[in-house]
Image (cartoon, rainbow, N blue to C red; front, side, top):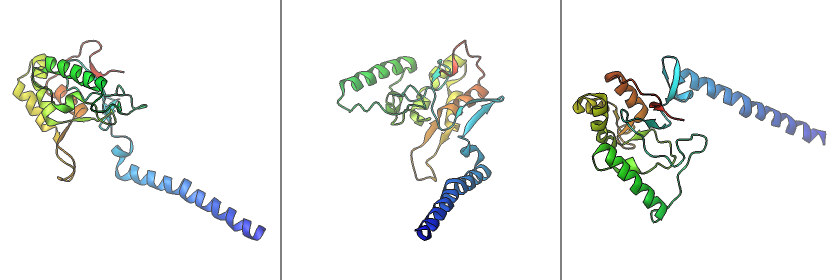
Length: 197
């Protein structure tokens, strides 16, 4: 029996060390060496303070910034997800209608679909170029800037499809808001601007 047990125990220990310790350490080290920003969550540092990630949406309060897509989870990265309401749900129809009314009142233009519907994860950091550009007038008015100049900053932040093939053109809300702050400095009032908790 020991003749069969000894190799089984030895192989279990060997593969546990190989796949449970050595492999993860090698992969983590390789990721840190080759892609340090991505390996650490694509965090954005401003003056020594982490203000967010390129990969996770966050809410923005105030009229001087791009607003992200709505979130069924309240932008809570610990409990993400969609509402799971179907297209015939009265609650979903009412929620989207309420979002549409608020968005159109704030921006003075018809609401693009991604401005009033949440993404599947609730944390999509991107909006469509159409949704971003439709907010330019509101942002320009609050910042005292030319609408065309604000549209130019937004247009400069449009990311194309991955490898020119996969996905749609998109605008990262956090990165574009940082660019807007740099181009048109705007001191936020108490409680406005950066992501709200």
